[in-house]
Amino acid sequence: MVPSKHASRNDYYRAIAAELKIREVGLVVLAGFMRIVGEPLIEAFRNRIMNIHPALLPSFPGLHGRSRRLTMG
Image (tube, rainbow, N blue to C red; front, side, top):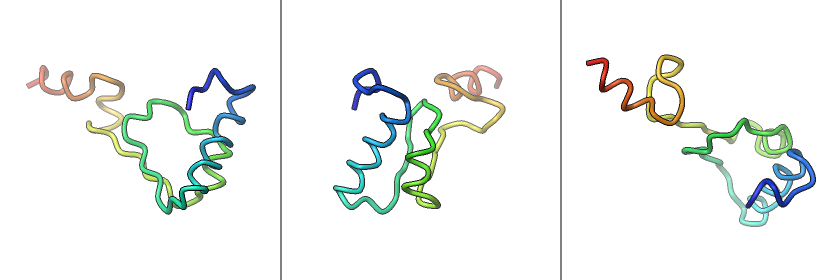
């Protein structure tokens, strides 16, 4: 789904939630999502969303957390 094709941020997250429900998704795993998750998605999947990050937060946030950690030795 493309966020710009929706009238608002909440409409985008409602569309995602609707599609996940159609597919009978039980657990939403955010891997590399890189967006703040909207309330409509959180409400639709309360206590069934897992966000994973490849680096220790908050010390190494963002796209290049792992490489920044590696350069620190």
